[in-house]
Image 1 (tube, rainbow, N blue to C red):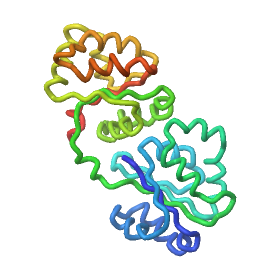
Image 2: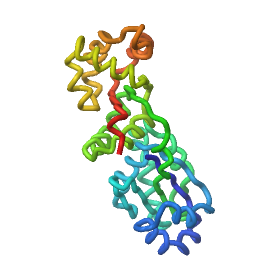
Image 3: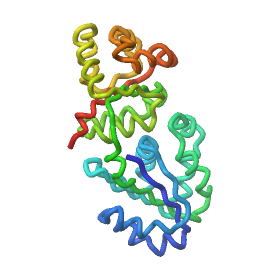
Image 4: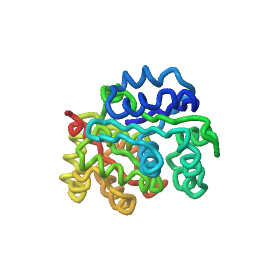
Length: 256
């Protein structure tokens, strides 16, 4: 799940503030769209970006978060904005967030510094992404990215929201190996036969960068180029670049 950030001129935000705060708590996304859609800049925040943003600015904003309902909303008034921007522009924080900063970098550049000239409203995207065609995957995540998003992936794993977990991992992946249903089943059979130590790893869904080398070596034993060409190609061409964190995506878990 991604989010969209709306920047509203301060006079507009103040005029609509009561409606905005009430809407964030109870309105549908469509109703919020009518309220916010015609106003100024809109920036998309990837799945990991809004999560670290919300976590860091909890005390500087009004937030409505319900992960079970896939609802994530935030408002920053013009009065709160200077301190909010100061936090985002902190050089150490920007360095820490750099591995996942795409929309965040655009947002930081767009917000005025030291002045309450605008208000900011962030709302979740619509649920169209849930209906896109999905496939089994092994998703590789760079270690510096994994360290930023792992707590949020673990939270979704505990919640059992595998669809949102796949969205989060995919938004910030270095690359992915895709498998058809047949090849995913064949991979499982090959693991049982030739690399049984991977069974608990795949069942755990996430594996940290620290164990990547042993996982890569085990996968190489089942990467027959005749039956697993994508896995074989990944291991030969891409696998040695980093100590990746891995997400094992079994789309059967995403059926609600």
